[in-house]
Length: 473
Image (cartoon, rainbow, N blue to C red; front, side, top):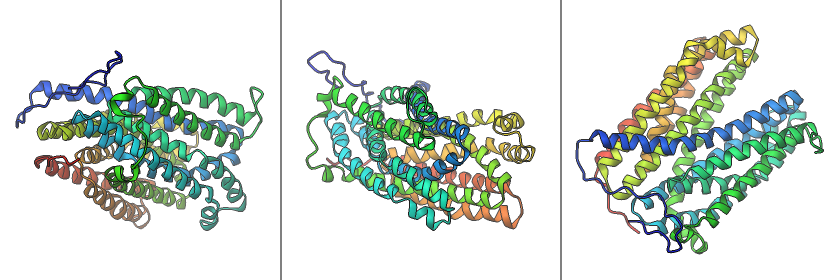
């Protein structure tokens, strides 16, 4: 059991007692998992949506100020976003191992996960800062026009300054989510969005007595906000009343050896997310080859998919924590139940969210454009969302369930097969060889997502049927 500090400060959320292994799952266990899943997923989803909403605000503010500036900012974000997503994957082990420690009721071990991960996060941040700072060579290599290369390169340098802050924030947020304390991260993201809106407008347009910087102002806003979020969440962890339970202030000595397991879990997750991001980037390039109308339609549909994917990501992260806690207790039946509840719930929620796009595709398309050709093409792909949303969200829940159960490289291989070996060639074949245009790209996504969710579900069935090995310390 968890002991409260002697000074009267509250203890962490209570750890559920070990459930007796049984092949049958009473309804109250299913209700418990559903309740905990949504309790964890709601604030995580809001936090994940907040990250995307900040980007949408940047796009709207800069786009209304200067369309050329928007082009520069979008290009500058490409290398930054790719590296940041890779960093999120590399740090996924923090959340997984923290949940394992919580499942074992070992709070000092949970704190050690965070303390050993912090220097690693800073190291990743510095490395990615250097890479983002040098983005101009990438723009030259990909044949960008001179004005884009010059201006986007300068904006990428500004964005790169915020990379270490992004890694620190992610590490702290993952640690708190592993402790089943997602609310601080959610509140931080809500506050950051409010500040971002005001500061964005002020620095882009020169309002409130601030200098008028255009797209550069949006880049500086993003960097300042990332450091604000990092310091705020770091301060919360260092100052929380129960810090002594976790040994938060015990220092960082021996962090490289102590972070070994978290780093190796992260290598697989980073590779997996990097491959998926690269595959969707290739599909974006295919759409560009089809022309302006196709590129615009693809962009609208992907914006809707990205927004809804944040909901799936929140449910998937909560699934990982629920599976990880049961894994830490060595409660195999409860671990299996947590995974299946998370997977099926995610797919059901995503199907419900896809209904408006299927039923009212014209209305959705009109929110983004008045161009008749773009609307017609967009409608032709929005009707596929009832297939794409559940399968894409489901594969994310399944891969997080597997990682919560300590499975690392098998999910990564399945992602490799699904997105690089299936989605890209099938999308290309249907789009260009069969002449299907933009719908061909999305049918490629449909097929890849079906393969991914099926393969990962089968893998989770296998993993969750095995006895859980004794934990080594």
